[in-house]
Length: 263
Length: 107
Image (cartoon, rainbow over all chains, first blue to last red; front, side, top):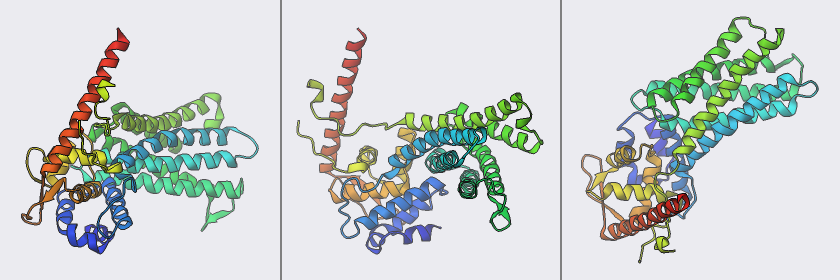
């Protein structure tokens, strides 16, 4: 993978930095955040390939990724809940709300990339699984949601022999399983909100148990409340994790005007 | 106060963190990365590290030394030390101003 990442950089950059950069990449296991960060670095190098005269502000760097991740988790958690709650509770056309849910899932996907930066390097397999499984799940969920938006209530196959609802359900289940791993990896990293990570792990687990227990949320008002509560807690956990990433903010504020104290 | 501007755009913060890391002696890339992470509690990605290193080197704020076993150490130049001092003094003044205003607002 390291060779592939290095190949993303322009040849001029590689001639100057490749050897030492490879040594840095080999120094510890690469997490999803590192890979995304290196890809952004390669894009940056390609945008200013000749003499490394990088103009200011061409790329976001790690700080921007963390902010996007935090913001993605906050907005994604809210939109996902709104989309699911409204689409399952409203009559008539669900399409706009399904699209809101798909946008929310996209936000959670962005959150996964950004927040994975905080996960422990000491357990790279867990970090990768905690990223890859929910990321794949989120992608499949989005495909299923788009399918439901296109196909409406039709049970006709959308991809292969699968109808859109089943694709969505499998995607959501994968996202939930992956979220449990993500919660555990976040707890082990001990950087972001512990309560958020615990809530993510437990709420995802409860939704999975409810789904497999044959529980019918439509059977009673209490049933709807239980499932809605678990799903709400799941979404709120993402919001809490995103907010705790955003709260960490910049450690050092740059650009303080000289002599500002005297102003 | 004359303060050299780092002019690193979005890489200003990683750039400053790298300069601070090098202020107690030369370090290679991985050592800078772990030093910054230990000091701030936040990750510094390798892509960001090298984008910032390239900018700092281009501006003459740091210089590369001979590599040791593939790892190339970097050290602060005189211009880099002056720039860092200016940035930190600006931040110190800004922090003092903020704390003064906070105290005044509470009283």
